[in-house]
Length: 169
Image (cartoon, rainbow, N blue to C red; front, side):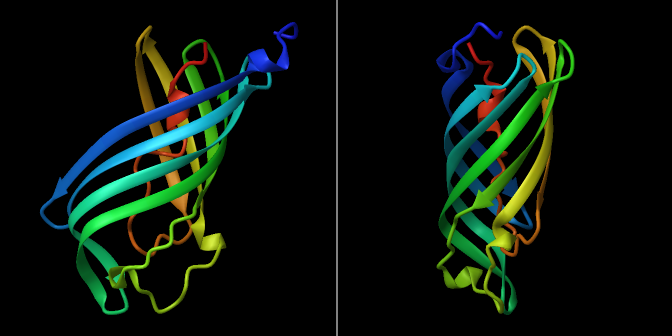
């Protein structure tokens, strides 16, 4: 590993995906995300990365919180995130990690109006995740995300480390 040059330890990645959800009580959505990132192998077991994500969602009867309680919203929601993360390989099959993400989205619809403006700290979130290799091409993955103040009840459901699920060449 030490013989690798810096450029061989850096990887540029791009991931994209689609998600759909439906609920009788909370509406439905169709979302697409795009997430470019750069990662750096600090050691054979530790990788750090940073990137951005763009999530575009079409929602129907989505329940938002505003000054008057819940209000249905239908339309398009675009979200922008930036994130940094680290992933550590515990053994041949298990990797664990964590991330910090920042929601740069400004909601300007009256459906998202609030009594109190969102502070910069309200936009910060954290996550812990794992990746377990079941076979050569099959993985079990999970993540717990915490956002200190998600007033609008709308968050990036794709995770802040989607780019981590691609093995570096």
